[in-house]
Image (cartoon, rainbow, N blue to C red; front, side, top):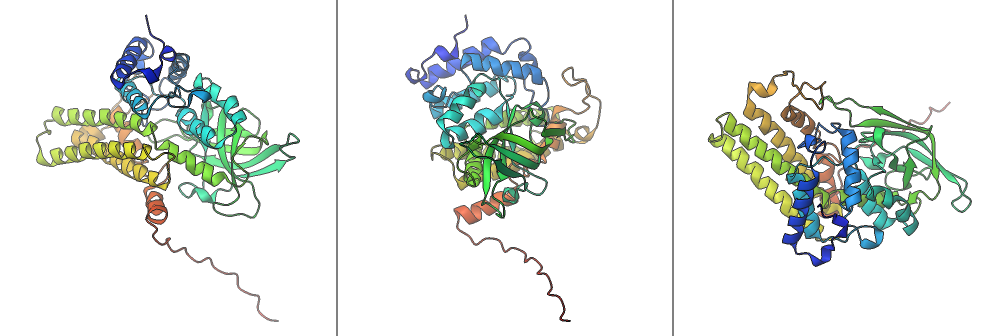
Length: 418
């Protein structure tokens, strides 16, 4: 008989006992349809078996495996950092289905707990915990990608909070992952007219199922359509669906990005470990494992992965992440891109061949998983804040270096005297 996770008091378990408990639960539940997704759903492969992954999310919710690190008072299980790491490691090593609500569990939820009201937590956390409500992120815009402070989407308060007013939202977001299958979106919008850059922004929670919201899938070079354009045309959300004070959304938005580079990065790194092992296997298969140049590149990849892990552990011990979290994004984005290149280089011409692939989970695909990974990793140094932006954050906000000089805007000419 399976042992339900929620029935186990984590505080009374040693780390070794907890690891065995996790391994047992995963072995008993990653079966049937769930096992058919072994190793799938990673970079460039996000749409595969989505209905199965949604069912799996609810299976995790029933067993208490969602939000295990949240405080008990908010519905979590108060797992220690070590236990959260163990869960992330064993989950990835069991090759359980890729998660369907990373945005809700790992980004929005800790942001609500840190910056939201108790009423907001009571309303939204249960739907994340039971795996029934999915979230997407409304940050980037056509003219505000890595430069998030250039947001132009506007929110205007119609009425008042006390009188049951609403925010009316107009604008466009882009690269909104899984927006077409999400129930809610957390949106950074400019709510104070005449403000620029970081000032006057607010962090709003907006329902996706309404006439004023339209999503359009962006087809990627991998063939998938995880990303979307999202258009808000007089979309509405209640006045109390704001996290933090009006105009103070920049701090909330940055706090969320700090959470993104916390515990969840460790699960990501175990996935990277599996990809590195696949790369080593490819080198052996093609008889290149003993090539000195190849071995040097493999050792560099292995060393980088260990450094990534140690930096993540050190960062998590510092509490709510600050601008130093940009170190992790800058490092792993570059590392993963380089691994994708190595994986294809080792295959030689075969890695570049565009041969039809028989994939029962994605019958229309004609790329191998390695080719999808390579193509997707081209974006790793761009999304979530480009390498250039991360370096600026570290230079200006961590090292205290002078800001980059801004190009002067041309001044309008005065009319000629008559």
